[in-house]
Image 1 (cartoon, rainbow, N blue to C red):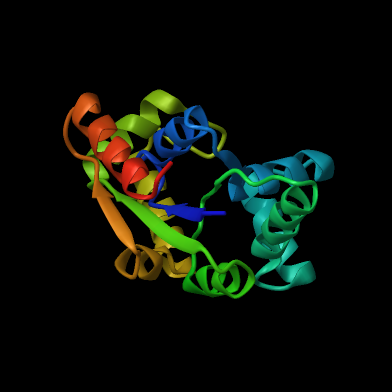
Image 2 (cartoon, rainbow, N blue to C red):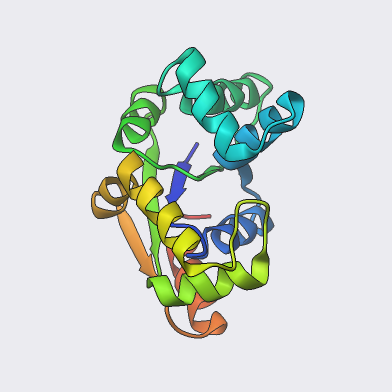
Length: 179
């Protein structure tokens, strides 16, 4: 079974990769959703929860919870490819590689100006319409190690043109991995 970790800075286009893989039969496990679910239980925002979880249970708690969720899917008989959305550190990549033989990383790269415009339109809980807040979030992600993940990826897709071209690149990747 193929397990693909998808990484990229906020607004790069990771969600479309997951959506298109799901259309082809994959299952998606979102590390961000795991944090958001826990935040809801705690009555905190997701940034605060991510920090608190790491303080309480260690730096790799989100990847540990993700691995636990994937192993449960496998134990339940799932043999579909799994997409992990939201990998942010090379330590997480190492953990996934230790736990899953057929693991690879796909990163999506988009320049900051385009990503900021996309996030202003998307407006999820952790998105901002202030460029200074957007940059602060980028630096936080980069300090966590996402730049290392992107630079050491098995495959990188550049998402800086029109939607059709981007979808074509995603389709080419999914075909390369027989999904």
